[in-house]
Length: 276
Ligand code: FPP
Image (tube, rainbow, N blue to C red; front, side, top):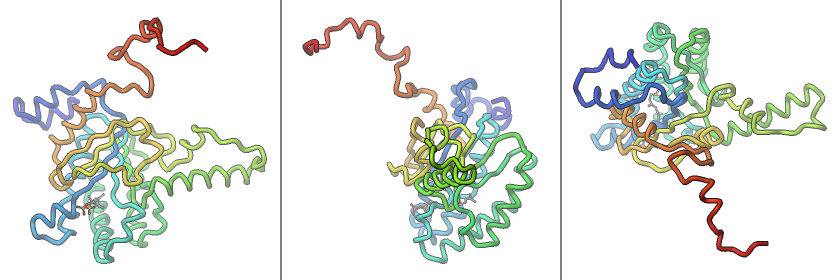
């Protein structure tokens, strides 16, 4: 948190918001559906790709803010398995933008000890994008600070299918297929995010109330935060608002907490149904 205050202006709205954030309750994993680039551009009578270009700055901002706050993992939904349905020219420009981002940002990622990983079926990407990604992943692999997962050619269902196939392949290799029994830990471990904490907070920009096939398994207990703001307009203050709102939520994981009813008193109340 000290790192964050170093770049804030004492007394202003952002600084006050940051003051209200509890450093002991920073989400370990934040996932973001970056949405609204196209609408942002259309509103300005610009081509859609101008929205994607403008979407790079908020990526920089959230990466930096997460690092300064002490978030462990940040997962950004950059390209879904369904996004191939878009016009070829838009898809090609997205790959060019990705390569540009990686080239420009790599020194900054290294300076800030940030590790980059990719989740998704990367093998279907254009070779140049694959090579750039591979190199960035490799060069940041030994960094120990914030981990940024770029979800690229990613689909939550595809990820589950891949996890199941990995489990089956391993059992075949070991000759244990006949007695294979799958549990939740095995599925979690074989997802692209295996070994990482599940997201605590899922942010979606542009007001859409959808999950869009993102991290289907991992967001089982994530707190959802939807803002009307289009991704290119998403600023550090918007991220801090999401974290502050997350900290107000009463996370029960299906159980009860101090803030809710007292189970012992509950049990004494007549149920209003005849005893069996
Ligand atoms: C969603 O907006 C955005 C995308 C599908 C692409 C995300 C890409 C970026 C933010 C650019 C840079 C990112 C990296 C990681 C380099 P949309 O096109 O679905 O917007 P719309 O719903 O308004 O049409």
